[in-house]
Image (cartoon, rainbow over all chains, first blue to last red; front, side, top):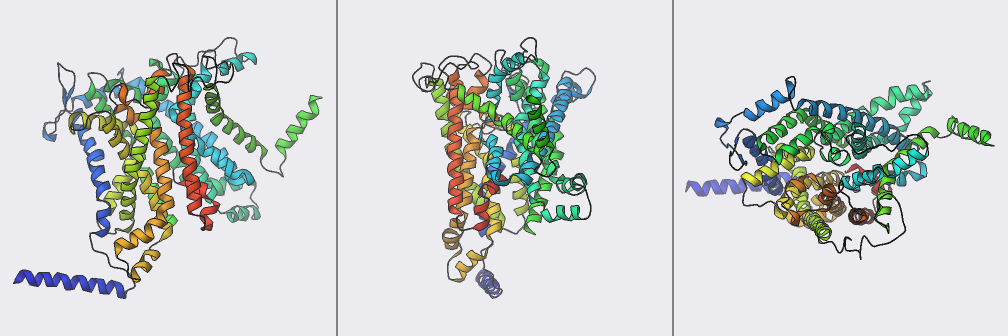
Length: 323
Length: 297
């Protein structure tokens, strides 16, 4: 009895909702209609993105089987053992720690490489957005091209060029800029930094280009009309308007650089250029898997602020684009 | 003789009335720096000698014919087919899930929509090494039903690539608005029919763009695919490049990389042309197919 009335109640309520929506000119959907579209993706991400984070914490907080050398994760957070974290922390921050040089090196390499990306990328993005003219489409295509060339292929190209008898040494020798061939691929920090800059600069240029391209020309004309010199116009109008993109580009380039290990492996393969990514990559194949997991969590903690900043800034950009 | 030419170049560079010449030269140098090494690497894949620094004449021997060529060396051929297989399957699975996700997020205004969106975007900015190592450990220790190798690689790649279709399709949904669908439903279509007959055709360009971007991106993927690989049978082209580039590789490695490059070019070219063709009537899209393509990376 009571059940049928609630059902009737549901039915009329639903009908009324539909009628109200239609009167208002809108269209009525069942409540579950749109959320159900996100179910496969959300479940997928929960299973294969969130769950792995839990797994990595459990491995980092677990122990290693003394015989087989394989990790024994501890799934219960109450029994977590922060030994690996203590180790990573001590080796990173305390004087003479074995991880310290790699961390310092990584910060230096990333800082220099990101600055290079910005110093080279900004003028290029500026020129193409302002003065591309009739070649604009082609220039843009050339800017995007590196995206579709595998990172490894681009590094392979440099290995070819930088070999001891490669074209770079040949060119420098014939111009008498070098007395003898230089071993570019034997643990040279400079090569790794240039490799990082070369590898990631397209990710810097595109956001810069998009931002510079959106700037309203009339603002620049107004600045010039009001007596600003070209340099002043750039400094007071263009640069502030592209600040967001500079920050976003910096973050998007910085994040993968911090986890990069293959650039150093391919272009130097020497302990003299070990980066944090290399530490992780070495530890993962060794009996010290807990340390690898702890290093990954550590890296995540280091990078969480820039990651959240990037999400925040893109969300704001989308809101502005909609408004 | 050289003095006036030098002055002419200097005058041309410092002409304040024309385009900023210095920036033009700078941009040109950047593009050379960015693309010339790859062009040279492709060129050396056609070398008839074994060297990757001295060009000895044109030949296809590293693609076909030589016992170490891509076609005749089983490890290289295996890497090629594994790469193509993973990229194709990733594209076919992640794009439908991503498109549904995007439609759902765009229309769902309730609680939970924000968290789903955050989850997706967070997966997009997580550095690959973090995702790769955590997936490796989860397949090793927790989801042990999945063995490392092709299945694990596929699952990992789909997780990593899913955000691309979501972002691309959402951008398109924003520009379409809801009016077309509402018109269809005013004319009596059910929500599902309106979706299928009206919204889906309007989303086709974005879906095509996502398919091609996901294909091109996953064929190039290295970190995740490597951590989830198991032995020689699941090696892909990037793994092959990584593990042999510092040995004494022959130009066959360049040939392998070039084949990967060519297939990416075909995929992206097809995507770009189809995108332009599908949005032919729309003025804004026509002017800037490339630009909107660029903005979506």
